[in-house]
Length: 79
Image (tube, rainbow, N blue to C red; front, top):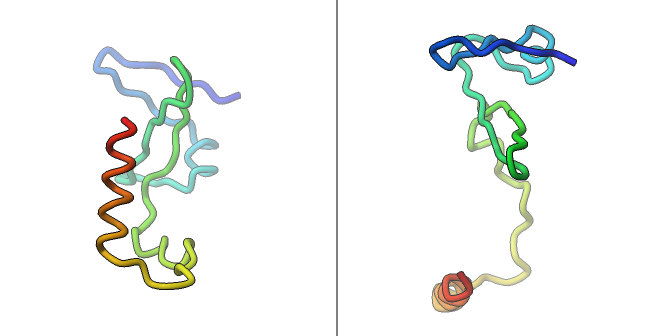
């Protein structure tokens, strides 16, 4: 298991093996995401948004703006 030391400035050096597995290099961004209380995962945040194109299939039929607004309102009222 790779480990790192926290400096007095709150900085860490990500071990080389972890950087290689994440595919990150100098200047790249990483995200820390809390997956449960006090447990975080770190992931590379270097992907271009355009890479996401096509991962969600198109709907079988077009969705009307009114239908979208109703769905948004329903989800908002559940919170």
